[in-house]
Image (cartoon, rainbow, N blue to C red):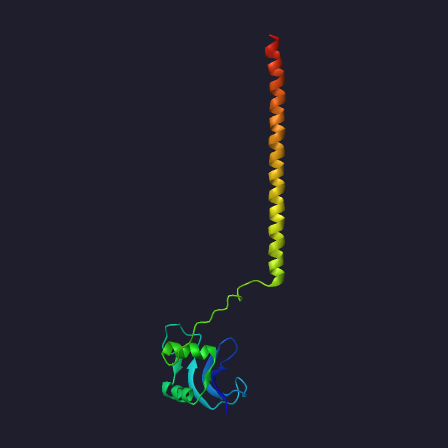
Length: 147
């Protein structure tokens, strides 16, 4: 029989409390279990001793028999020094989805077009200012020659 060491939820609505149990993998989350081996109260402070309570002897017994802890329980066991949990790395998890990436690309393209338009407008304004300066300087030169 395949067994898991997992959490079974207890407690009332919005007041979670979990039992750490050994159960058959086919049993429902809060249903039938073989043995209760600890508890977890997430409402307590992280440094509280009663936040995670483990029956170390029984957990070691079940681990020797081949019971597989879930990821959350494995975190508790790693903190207690009973099992080693390898750090996981999923670099794709933080990436936005395809549609979000398309929206970012569209925004970047629109910003580039806007920057180009502003640059072109600045160049036209500089050219117009230079022409106006030349136009003002030309009559002044003609007056100076005339005198």
